[in-house]
Amino acid sequence: MELLKQLSDSAIKSTDTRFLRYMYHLIPWENRMTAIVGPRGVGKTTLLLQYIKLHLSTKDALYVSAESIYFANHTLFDTAMRFSQYGGRHLFIDEVHKYKGWATELKMIYDNLPSLQVVFTGSSVLDIYKGTADLSRRVLVYQMQGLSFREFLNMRFGTDVPAYSLQQIVDHEVVLPQQIEHPLALFDEYIHHGYYPFFNDYGYEMRLGQIVSMTLETDIPQYANYSIAVSTKLKELMQVIADSVPFKPNMSTIATAVKVDRNKLPDYFDLMGRAGLISLLREPTKGVRVLGKVEKVYLDNTNLAFALTTSEPDKGNLRETFFFNQMRVNHSVFNSPVSDFLIDGRTFEIGGRNKGQKQIAEAEDGYVVKDGIETGFGNVVPLWCFGMNY
Image: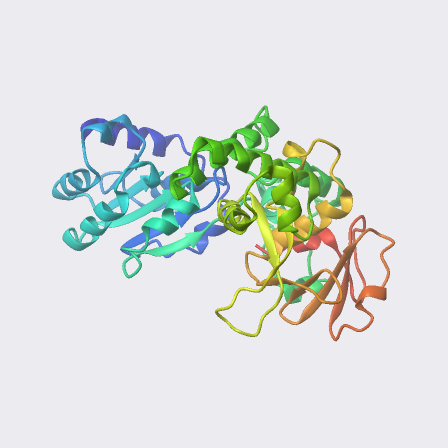
């Protein structure tokens, strides 16, 4: 326990608190048990350490990583019980999916240590969703994704640009601070390498490739009990998707290209989507519980396009990927029957600075979202503004 406490205190002390992610203010930190899940590399570990450093006493809080060698000879429950006996009140567990049987022991902690609050993270959304079945009545689950364009600007310049609602965005109310006078060059930078908080690190695209490989080779196979051979097929499928997006999936054609059973492809697509590698744009449906048919497949974010594609990514694809990625956090985004996207009854057509009004002529509430312009007018809105939504 003493070693764990030393490691915890050291990690907390070295944590930078100058920039806080959007999720920081959305989580009810006082809840007895909370899960923060999301793709690898989006900053979940930092989020935990920042909260401890800013709001808790290190005497009451303990941060542990479930992949620590310490847990080769100790259990999560015993660790939590000892910490509680020493007066501990707040336990933070990182990478909990790396610990075998984590869901069962978290349930034991919740049921037997009522004075102990637990917050845990998982780099793989797959294992978290699988494990929370037994915890569904006990844990609140929060999904976290990468940086918005707004967060990228704040992190890069130390500014405090607020988030804007969709209504404020289409009403042209987005205002940037004076030091960010012209956003287009910065927007291009973000599209290339600004989605993950480590965008300033050397070898950014190489790290993205490693994240994709770990997800396909470890996370998904472990969750679905897939063999190494299936893992190889998933990597081939990922490359096909990266070179083709956005596209309407033709399962027979894709199955032939990757040489897999077409009946298994929908499951593969679903798993890759939940793992944060791709996004599935569906048709709108009237039934609340019914998921619409997949209309298009996108990469999860624009940075993946530059890390994975074998040629220069198409600008039109990047524009649509960015819009879908940024707006899905706070809204249900669907395929539009007459244009590109449908959000809360609003139709959005995405294009370059010369995009016209033709596609939305019959839309009841339509907007043209243009790349390459700094300001908008009427129903024409700059694409970069939609990166201010979270």
